[in-house]
Length: 64
Image (cartoon, rainbow, N blue to C red):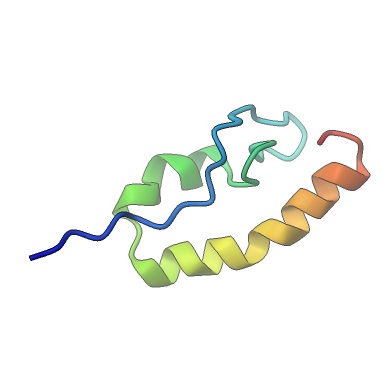
């Protein structure tokens, strides 16, 4: 049996932006980061779909 690593958007830049609560590196919230390994693939994929918009928001607001 081969164990597959959990897909993650983490880029090892971990800093939470106070106003949005999103990580400046990957765009996830602290609760999402904390529960990431407990989520199933569908839940992870759903969050990953939202991350480009979050990152764009952080970039446009000058936070990233």
